[in-house]
Amino acid sequence: MGYRLKVMGLMTLCALLFVQAKAQELLNYPLDTVNGEEVYRYQVEKSIGLYRVGVNFNVPQSEIVRLNPQLRERGLHFGETLLIPTKRPVVISTKPRIVETIVKETKVMPEPEPKDTVIAQDTVIATDTIVPDTRRVVELALMLPFESQQTKRSGNAERMMEVYQGALLALRDLHNDSTLYRLRVYDSERSERRVQALCDSTELDHVQGIVGLVYPIQIARMATWCAAHQVPLLLPFSDDIDLANQPQVLQFNSTDEQEADSLCAWLKQKGDNVHCVLVEVRDADLSGSIRTLRKRMNAHQIAYTALPLRDLLNDSAAYALDIEKENVIILHSDRYQQARIVLPHIESLRNVGHNVRIVSQYAWQKEHIDLPQVYTSVFTANTDPEAYNALWKETYVNEHVSESPRYDLLGYDLMRAMVAWLNGEKEMKGLQSDIRWIQVNNGGWQNACVEVKSEK
Image (cartoon, rainbow, N blue to C red; front, side, top):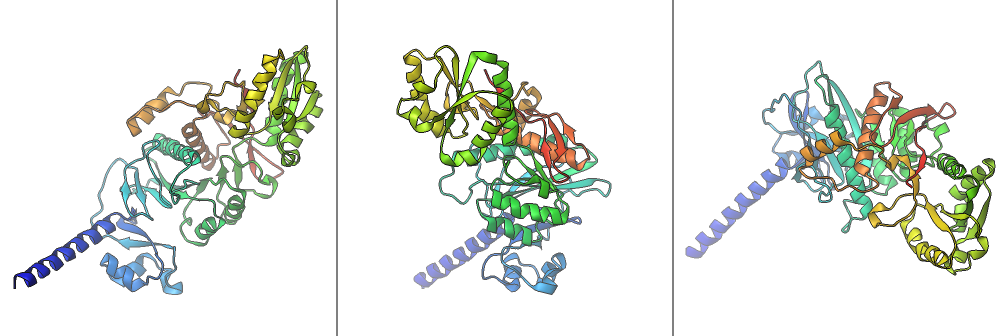
């Protein structure tokens, strides 16, 4: 008898724990408010039907179909997002609160702290307020490779997180009594399939502007969707998209031509006191930015000597130098590893009496490399953003670690630029870069204010 009682007690305890775990799991799905009704956002898992969804959430199937009328025509599809009623009263608040929720990992996270927050595959920034009829709602989406599914996240993922944090602060700063901004955040990963799934779902039906995407194959797919739905797509980094054939694309980063012309302007300011040495990093570069730089240097009548990288690395570069002038060695690459490799060889040229300096495409202040860098003004703050830093500290309860580039400031400028565009404004002053959109051959738009500047 005692053994049976123990078994029954254990089974009862397990049942209670299961119920509590299931209740907690449901509570951890993303919350949203639709037409004054609080709902969960649930992404359909593999091998699950409508009956099982209803059982898991303890709601009738008819209630699920009521909130998701598309189910009447085509049934349930794996990966689509359903609205599930919570059966709880809606909390009314006069001030929006930004809440981050995780879909794939089904756990709620507080607002992110820099360097520590992990974003899952689908993240939704929502509010718990009932939107008044008079309030304008602006739905935005941020798509970046957060690498949430990888065991070890790279430094690139940390930079994407900073872009996200800056974007959140921009929307908080833009909040007013007449407009409510709602942000959906997605880990775009490196997969075209991931973007294709979003385009094929109803997830983006009410999105009015998209910021992000990095890889060309993803950009091409999303640009097609944006053209069909008349939704602007603001690209923060990519500069190899054909803007003439992408009318909905806004390209924030500089093009090869902009960088080359700005570098030429910097060199011309130095007059005849410098001798340019252009390092040919690898053969592939000759068909890209190096070829563009050569063309623009010829157009600006700037003489240069081409130096193969192998000659620099085997210490036979002296033939390319001018002993009477300062030799500006141009390493037209954004790869830190390449800059790190050539530095000892540049130093060896200095040690034997040559006047040399290196100019590279980006700044690597984080790695403490002492270079006279040249890099895009997207990553160059001309003024100290005191008000922004105060907002950062108030939101994330810590000081921002100052380094260059500051991707949080980039995210702030990107999100404000998208909102300005939706409001019909084609010019904006940013914290790091002013923005002035110009149309390219009656197609997409390019930021004309981005230019390359020298730090020293």
